[in-house]
Length: 378
Image 1: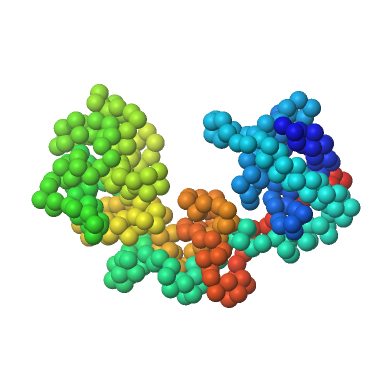
Image 2 (image 1 turned 30 degrees about the vertical axis):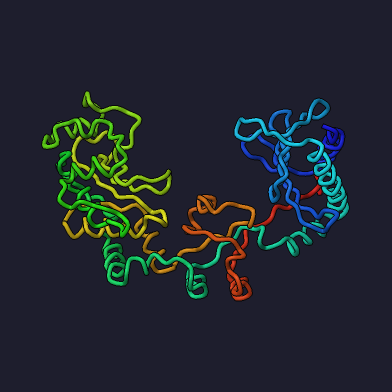
């Protein structure tokens, strides 16, 4: 590439600055203004002798370079990227020229340069969290699971959580269980969680419902004697000859990696040969109301049941959690997983979605710190 010499020169300048460490990779984050006074975020990662340059808040293809040897456009997920290198050369030349000017500025007065970034970097390119209660009170169109569930179910679920129904394993333990018993759990869940757009034949047995509505990769669960306590125990313990691997036997409602509903069975502890714990899990926003309806029905049917993250779901119903703010260039898909668990972020939005309420909410937003670039021995 024609910009190779400029890449080499930039990387030579960059090693004068402190870097972060991710495992053994060296990572630099450079936030800078270009010639058009637009902010850019460039991330450079050094793995072995190779440097990877990524334009975090833009669409410019990344570069992969080994100083003095080669520079090429990065491949995406192992697939070659076909681009017009002449256009890419020009864009990267301009980008690196601006980044180099900024490095000089940081080297002269790194505190002043970083203070400018903290003050002027656009809010719509930053990560942050804002109280759910404030969003709920301001954005009337914001999706509310409590409204989807209804006040009666919300109160009932919150009461069950506060009574400790889902936390105490001794209360949730099932002494004996057969496949037929498990299918009865499924039947109750299917009927309670039926969506308005879903056709469900309530005349079917639990086994028939499981066959029709579950993922299908049952690992031999449908092949054992459903009334035998011993066969189910052997199947759970992985000793039954019909137990095969690689399936999804607990996925009772199909979905993606984060949007399915699981009703799983396990032993109370590793290596235990007595008793079972049945646990329901389906916390994605699109399935949350459905899953809460299921667990309430199971409790009402006196079926011992554990519920994944019951306390967190209570906080969501009461708007006591936080909403994550994601940079405008970032996808919202699974973006909540980026936030640490102690921040209690389940749902996310872009800053622009706050609309005319931005000014009201800014004092309540906790922004994620921006990276600070400093010269070595700075």
